[in-house]
Length: 169
Image 1: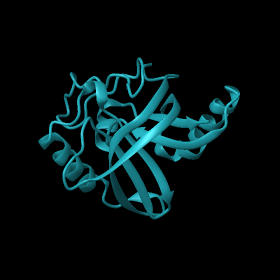
Image 2: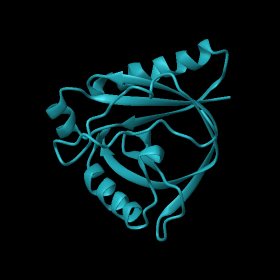
Image 3: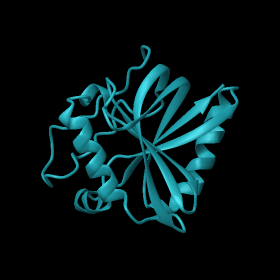
């Protein structure tokens, strides 16, 4: 995949009028290469790994991004990284700076893996990502997760796809 490119996030099928139905084709086993790729950084609070304010933080952040017309189907991903049982960091891909938002840039090489199942599988998925990187003969750095749908939409669709995005060196 070319520099700073992401697989397409097909938003065309959205019967819930909330999260589009995730189509995993094109997302599994992809190598991503970022060079100063821009993201809006947001943080959520958790209680023992259970988010307390993800819905409101996502809504507020997406509103700011949409007002600036700073995302598209070809540049949509939210990379989430749990920092502690109390806090998670979320990076929303954008194609320009957003006034009033904390901006970060990522550079590096990444590989993706699509998972499907309950969130309780996260520790297992984290290990699988590290193993995937090691099998490539690389050193694992950071693992992020892209929650493709909210819990209500995952239930409606009968699928809970989560894309692991592993940084390697």
